[in-house]
Length: 250
Image (spheres, rainbow, N blue to C red):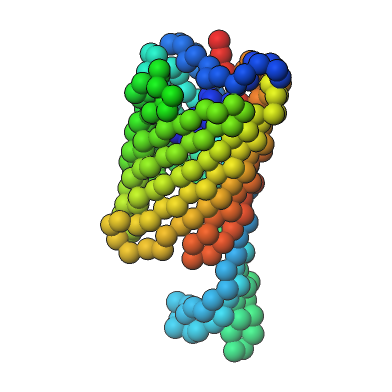
């Protein structure tokens, strides 16, 4: 949440020929967004059913995500927000036994949420350091520290964090880097990369790379739309696509 917020905040150009600058975060201002994401992935392997019979399988998973989030600037240095994610997962599986094949399919719906607090430590600093705390489901807690550097027309963002969850691995150390480019008052591009390493419990590290393209419907960016494409690498590799609409006020 923090890295995405920083890229959004520091890439607000007021006009095509004006220098890029950080917008003011006034108390009482708010933002909210609605998003729809899709991630397909699959795997091939070997299993044993409830009767002890072995089989080979090919599994295809479709994950559809609906996102709704909002944030309010409580003071010049404190922001509070909430995020809801409804995930519908459809699984299709083909099992191959010695005596023939069998096809299975099922759909599962889960609802996740998180509440976050973000502190802007020194608004006058060229690095704009921030600390965020969030908790919810499926991640229990998350603490992140970030900094950004503005060199018109490019923004550089770095983030370090620790996350915990209920299942093993129980906690992760995360690092993320991103850079954003503002073409004019309407169009912005950014790319990011992140790494998550288990620090409590056994698991495989996860890496991801992503690209975002945003279009603002007005120079103040009160209404904008973003398209995000990402690739996650770990035990398997999968691609995801997300489209989000964002509104800011007043």
